Image (cartoon, rainbow, N blue to C red):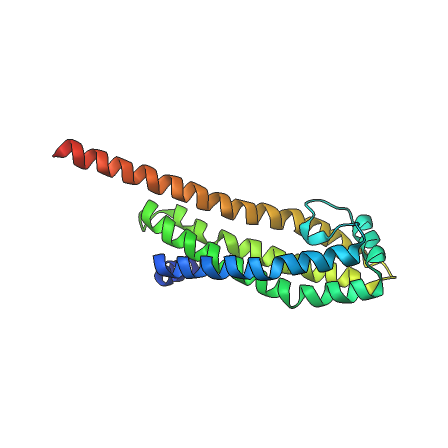
Length: 191
């Protein structure tokens, strides 16, 4: 894990983080509204597993029913096109931004620097969630209970990892600002 973390530190600088942020913002602005509209159309108000925080396996199966045949096909297509790309996009942004920030907050020997790889857990959980919800949609009208159960576990874990990654960004910025003020204060007092 340390080698992977160090690799991200080597490739991340302010410009890389800004470029990743721009890709994230543009991708989100151009694709999320359309994807949300498609999901709303097919879900008939039953919701989507991707945007839910908690649901049971039975509720996921009920969503598959409400989506109908065309909706399930559209859902599966979206999971392996748009929702394959989106976790990569947000993970690139989060990893590069965290790496850039944490390199300014923690010394190279600090174990806290490993926090830059937390977004990888979010991406992995997102892809696992996609796999399980796809299995439920593809298996309908048969119940794929193991997929129902695993999807209902992967989804909240994904949101914890995604939310935790964004929280780390906020804490990183806050820490960077505090460190900067401390340095300014000590420089000013020493003058």
